Image (cartoon, rainbow, N blue to C red; front, side):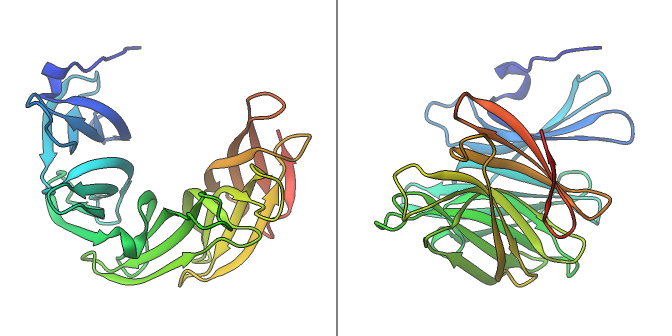
Length: 277
C-alpha cells in the first residue's frame, strides 16, 4: 500500500538501529530505535517517532540518558498502556557500561530511567518482559573469556521492581552445555523460556547447537534442551520464541550447515518436539 523512507532531515537524526513498531488505535504507528544526530561524534540516542496511518511523521522524541546508546535491544508495551525499553549504554568519560531501562507513559514521555552496572546484569541486553508484580525481568548475555567458555556469551537473568531497582540477578557460567541467549518470554505458568545457542565445551571448537533453557519465576534454571536444526546436528541457533494457545512453544531459528537456512520448531507443553520445518 505504501513505503516510507525516513531521511536524516525527517528525524533530525540518522536512525541506524531500528527497534520496534507498535500499531496505534487511530491507525498510526509508534516507532522506536537508536540514532545519531547532526553534531559530529554525537553519542547514540534512544528515540521514538509517531506517524499517521500513512507513515507521515507527526512528532519525534529523544530520550536523554547521559550516556551513549550502543546496543538497542527491546521495547515492550506495558500493562498500563505505556512502554518499557531495555538497551546497553556507555559513559565514555567514566569508562562505565550499563544496562539501561527506560519506562514511558502512554504518550511515550519518560516516567523513569534506571541504569544498572553491566557487572550485575550482563553486557548485552537481549529481552525485557513485564511481570505480575509490575516489575520487569531482563535477559542479557555476558562474554565468558575462560577456557571453558571459549569466548562465547553466557546467560544473565535479572529482575527489577516497578521503578527499576535491581532485586536479583543470576549469571550462568560455562559448563559442558550452556546457552548464549537471543530471546526470552514469560510463559503462562510464570516460568521463563530462553532460546539461543549452546556450546559443547568438551567437544571440538564451534560445536554450536540451537537450544532452549527453562528458568523458574526466580531465575533458577530448571531444564536445558538441545536441538539439531539440520541433518548433521550442528551449527544451529534459535532466534525468536513465542508461546502458543496450547501452551506449547513456537521457535524460529537458523543453521549454517550444510547451507544457510531457516527453520521453525513446534514444541508441546512438555517441551517435546511436535514438528519442525
